[in-house]
Image 1: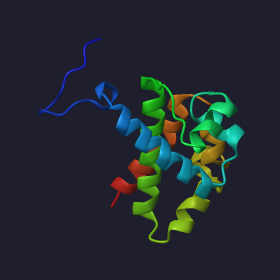
Image 2: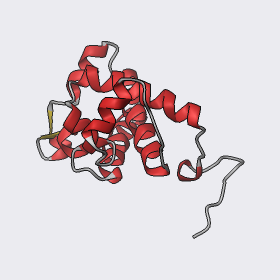
Image 3: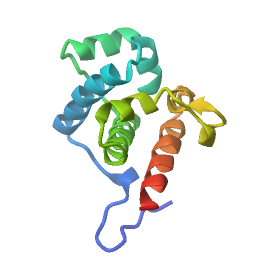
Length: 136
């Protein structure tokens, strides 16, 4: 399948990230997980089933290699955070939303959905928030 850019835009799945961009996203996601109250084991699942020790090294500033899947996961997590910041003027409400039961997810929390471990689980939460925001 060929990816085609429309009106000069690059499809998100074709976006290439630099090492500096990925490392900036890694730092941001570490802080975000702290706000969300995500454990190291949960973080490892959200990041594509990386080793817990690898995530712990990230927290010490040792980022190592990355791939397209990891970059897409980081991008989606930051997109979820951005959507929540736009929806909730009080940051703590957005942070709490991640662990609150939601009818849209069958009374599961967004975190439970994302802990399914697939990139599409992260994308599902992001799409939900983006669609909710677009109703404005």
